[in-house]
Length: 172
Figure 1: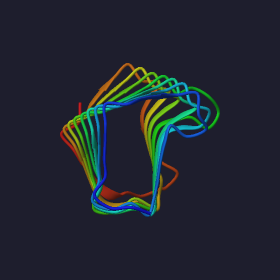
Figure 2: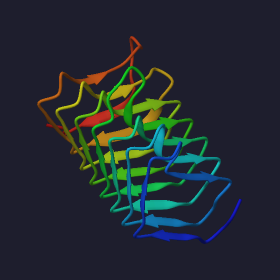
Figure 3: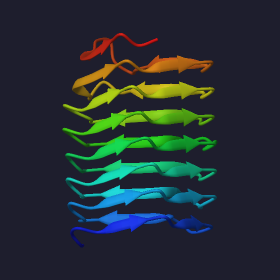
């Protein structure tokens, strides 16, 4: 429960959660390397108006979880090599009005998993060699998913719904 933090240039490994934020606002996480953690490289809950950029999350059981938060900027991060039955490069659960831009999702069971995500922009990301690149559940709406590059994934985009209330345009 803190505000205006700067978490910069750290290497974190072999913990349950590499970096854990709960009720943290207006903070920046940048240029860190969080790898080989037992659960998440970064776990983020009930934290608003935060930014994480230029980080590497690799070899964690699940890369990053962003939950119950809004106005989060996630830019230029690398989410790699999270494999397993419940492994994600990034898990977005009940977040809103956020931006996921310019990230690399590589070699994860699921590159990005979105549940209850609304009014967010997912653009200019690269999804390569994942099992599922993007899992977009039916309770997600009003998201804009554009200009992303899907390369060599087993499945590029999947959903559990018959309809879609999101905008997916100009993806490759």
